[in-house]
Image 1 (cartoon, helix red, strand yellow):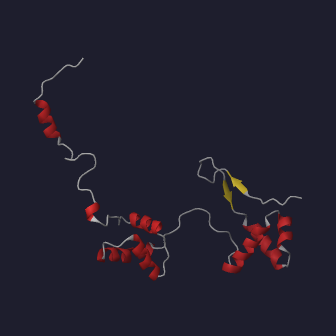
Image 2 (cartoon, rainbow, N blue to C red; image 1 turned 135 degrees about the vertical axis):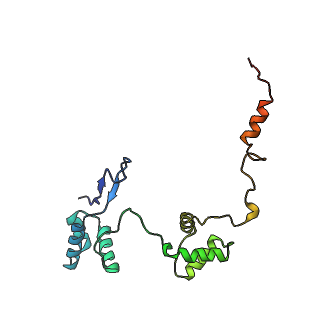
Image 3 (cartoon, rainbow, N blue to C red; image 1 turned 60 degrees about the horizontal axis):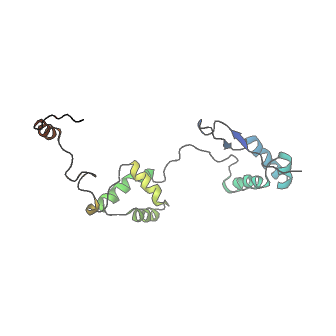
Amino acid sequence: MFNLSVYILCDNASAGRGEAGVQSYSQDLRDRVLWALERGERPTAIARRLEVSRVWVYQVRGREQKTGQRSSFQIGGHRRSRIAEMEPVLRAWIEQAPGLSLAELCERLAEQGIAIKIGALWHQLNHWNLTFKKNPARQRARTRGRAAGTKSVAASAARDGNRKARLYR
C-alpha cells in the first residue's frame, strides 16, 4: 500500500498564467485530524485513514498547540510592512542624520524591537520616496551620455539654417 500525500492543484491559482498552484487542505479535514488526535488515535493511523501525509498531521497538531489556531496559514495576498507605523520616526531619523546607512537604520529599528532586513527596509523607504544618495560627491553633475548637456532646439535650428542644402547620392 502506498502512502501518497494529497495536494489539490488549481489551474487558476496563478492569476491566469497557466501555472498550477497548491491550495491548502480543507478546514473540515483539519478538524477531523484534530478530533482524531483528541480521541487518542496515532498520527500514522490518521494519515493512512484520511490519505494525508503523517508530517502534515504533525504540522496541524503543532500549529494548534503553538498558536491555538485550527485554520491554515493565509496563502498569497498583501502583507503589511513591519515598519508601516514607523514612517514619522524614520523620517525624523533621516532628517536629523542624512548620512545614515540602511544597516544603521536596521540597527536603530532593532533597538525599537523591530527586526527587518536591509532589502525590506529599502523597499519600504522607496515606497515612501525616501531614497537619496548619501554621498554628494558620487552624484552625477550632468546627465549621462552628453558632456555638454542637451542642445537647445533653437540653437540647433539656427546652425542648420546657415548650411546649404546638399543632395547626396
